[in-house]
Image (tube, rainbow, N blue to C red):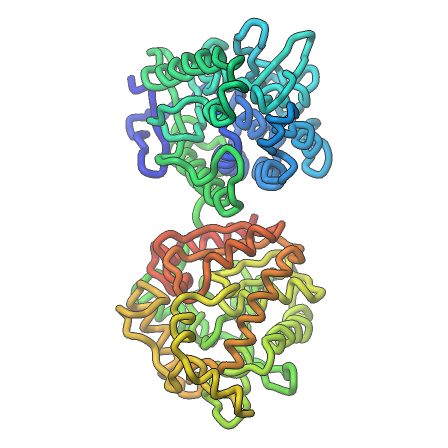
Length: 627
């Protein structure tokens, strides 16, 4: 009988698993500091699918904190604790080691779980009826690992004990006249504890690759402090190394009467024990969520079939693919049934909009496009999303179907970037809100994402969530390189009329093999043809004024990132040259309600990319809006 199954992003050996019902089932979670956000992602996938067949929960350190959020049924709670509490500058200060003070502020951590990020223990205890929940701590007197029962006594003290790293925590945690330190010293992967309690089917969530051989990282980290500080901890290192090797050996060669299901990253995570960036936290959480979905599909669907809701985490079945027939049909359907309208925007410029709602959906989704774009380039996306939402979109002033001004109507120009934002505000107030029966969501791409963000930052609104696709929070290398060699900006300083900034006054799209938007030849051709076939959509290069205003807009949106008051998902293209990914990262670090998901391998135009990239982007959009 096969009694070990590995689940990672590159390794899944669940095929020999038989369809069977499992009665006694245990869940074990390794620690790892901020790397525990991977575990948080796995468990949140379980929560979304209403999957909790476990009879026993055992965690060490950060693993125990994750389990507390899970048993209380609090989706994204563990992520919030890791992101907002353990990344707080007051949580960890290594300099305190030399002052004889606590370097880990466990009081701050526990206080958060009692107040603004409170654990719902009333709900948790109800769900734990006839179940077991333990955190593992090390008894200093006996140097033995012990399972502390979180259902009895002070859960606050127990969680502090399992997280109390020697030396980083000056005094051990006292419980029942005993002194306790971090359970990772004596039981870094508490799988043997579950086995000794009689559990023969055990899910183990790791935060390091299964073949990693290094020891307890906290203790290795402490070696840098100096030998004088560590002379009393050498015996802890030896005990830990023995325990770690024993846990690894158990997982690699489990006894014949036990089955192990191990969920783990295939390579080292981007997060570390402490001092992880928000982007790293977001990335590892997303990876954990995907591995949780993978486990549900490949393992849980066999051993707990029909006992959970797999559809809650399944990808949305998209209607179109990267072929002529489906995209032609979708675009023609939208063209046939859309509603057109216009309103007068700022400074009396006419703004044209369209609405598409063939399925009479109540919830509304507004799409705000980028520079040199039109809603005609979004027909396929509009068709996809119309199965879930009432879709509104419009063309910006000076481009697409909307009004233009000045002597050169093909110049990409704006007097002030603020004009774009006022137009969006008028569109929402005059057109969208009066015709919306349900919730309202906002999707912005590139320049449109900057406009959407400033609208949320500075205007009263009714928007519930904001998705930003490759947002223009900074200009990319493709534009900066042209600006460096442009002489036209100097010329404009001495004239009153706008002039071209990038050294070219003609309109063109690059050949497919040189474009920075998409790797899909079909979608790129359709995108460019939608403009080539409609002469009124023609737009030349941007003016120097547009460049100057855009740079100021990028600076403004970053400075005010903290003012965003709704959930924000940033979709970032890995192969980005049009806008700055570093600026997106900077915004994400400062915005309290945002997180980033990177679409690996994709170019700037996520919604016109190849299926393998575009489907990820659209599904992340839908999942974010629906959850």
